[in-house]
Image (cartoon, rainbow, N blue to C red):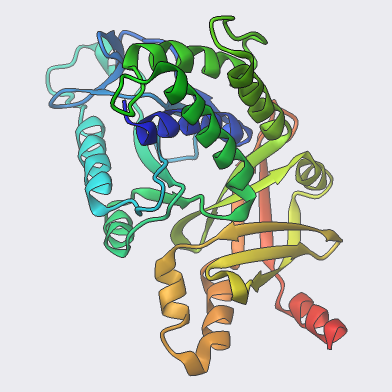
Length: 344
């Protein structure tokens, strides 16, 4: 197995833990209806075949007029190459097949009563996405989530170190990791990250075990809130339990949004009533391209994005671990003017 593949698998496990705050439950067992266990692991039944998956989960809450939501999570951990359109095409094909799996013409009453799902697909990338991949994803409602921000760096670095250590210990001689050994390690890694066990098998050396425990401590208290906006983009808000407490006290917040000019498409928020607290996030490059398309109107274009594309970030979070809360972060133009005036 290539190291980039191994890194991606471990990142998927970490991400599925980080997005639990959104009510995301990972599917771990077959249900004999749509999810079946086969020789290559768990598979979801499509109209034309079965599709193996590593990370598929269901959201606890279902909005009106839609089927219960399931989300495929795919993580790409490349050194430098951006994720291209080919990976998005694969997601489109899988969604088309699993979402067209229902035909009621010959179903009996028992089959008609089986719960139906609406499937979605998200690709997370540590190296970003090509422009054609982003445009194709928008057209086919595939969600692309950029993890190039500094806020993810410590997690990414630890996963990289873990895979390097695995490769040093279990290399097949061609700078690849033995698939059998990685499969065994991945299962135990998942149990530790999800809190299902505290111990990793003693067959792994102490340095490797320390890295895994360091990663678990690193993500302890860390959360990724998946926010939607007036755009086709999902905005991941990477934060900690302090943000969780802020939302528990007041789930609807007024914010200022600033573009970090020196960091390409990095943005940060300041909260009107908690001004010492900030969250950074990354927007897709297609928005950055629009913003800098006219060098004479960059500030106007940036303000347009703030007001009309990401002016209201909305997400549902299980702040107490049990009950869903609707949360909003609303861009306050007057607030950002106040901040600018204070600095001038």
